Image 1 (cartoon, each protein chain N blue to C red):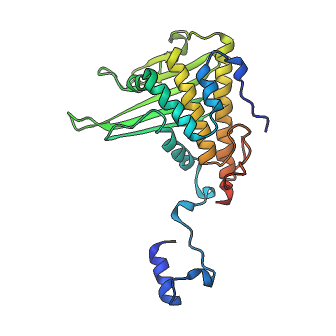
Image 2: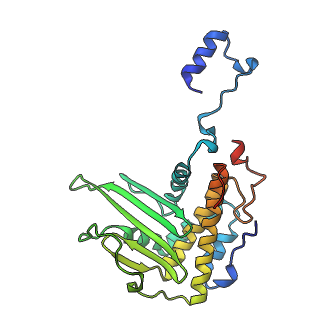
Image 3: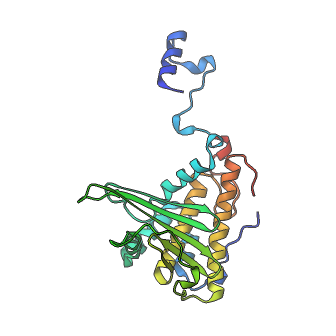
Length: 155
Length: 104
């Protein structure tokens, strides 16, 4: 409920205690997940994903998210300090049965290996655990809705 | 639900075990910080993600077979892929449930 609507109700009722009239004003952050589309949920996930690789440089916008069961996306855009032009980079990580293929612009491909592969797995695991807990309120190990968190569908 | 990690299939990936054993976000974040400060490889991953000066906008047309072969055994790679696709499956399930849509 917006501040304007609250003020209107206060004017109409003559009191700021709206709860006595049965009015419940939800916080803005309590927007129901049921009103969010899949795309909007992925956007929420990407806000967590963007935090997994260290601080985002000033002027950069980063997204890291799971697109589907075999695709992870790293997107980054920034303003070039010299040319003042916007630049962007998209890296697609494809999960194949024989490895994780990193596909970049310019037809550059390589399978992740060694430490980079280990880091990618760690990043995905942390993404999964944080997203399941913080957005979907589920136990990341069992997949069940976690009793310690409010149900996403009940928010 | 039947969701299970396949940790026994990738026993060589110690960091995965560490992440899996992390009981909360703080531990996981500390693990990530420790790993980053230890070898700075996540920053290298970030650096590798930056576009090269000669990069063009050609799309992803190079065949998968042209990429260099990974170092892990076929069994290890299969285990890694299982873990990642299982996680993605659960994320998809959670999204569908959160929006009250049917899964699959």
